[in-house]
Image (tube, rainbow, N blue to C red):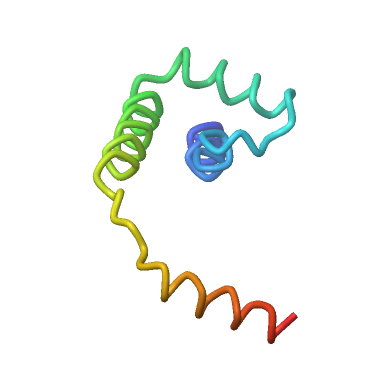
Length: 75
């Protein structure tokens, strides 16, 4: 079970490609051998695809400009 807990804790970092090669290999090996963790991985990966495809609203140019100004003023 510790491997499952560790894998699930690191799942988002794994999906984001933010792990070292060694950590990625460790989690990939665990996913290859653990159906429940693989199911969680599949769900999260599919959810990301759905969100990416559905959340395509364009931000109005005026809002973009306001945000850019606010960032410049804060920096």
